Length: 102
Image 1 (spheres, one colour):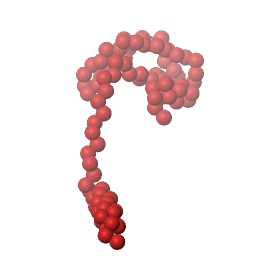
Image 2: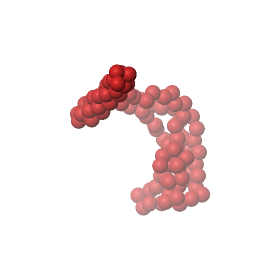
Image 3: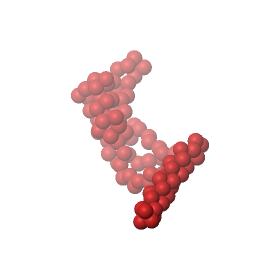
């Protein structure tokens, strides 16, 4: 009977520790802060659709017709491409998918 007691004591200790850990993680308002994701991004896809006040597509645009900034800091437009193959209802979801958006 004495040989079973250390094993039983170890199991009881393990169960007690697991219960304490579970109780500690379930406390409301005590959430751990989520660490920020830091990434070095060289290029960002910014899909846009330009229309006039009547909703017609505006063509013949160049990269110099746009200004892009991040946190108020102007960013260089290193690549510019136009497409006129699809209507706006099809272009936006396709552009978002290409950018990795759902």
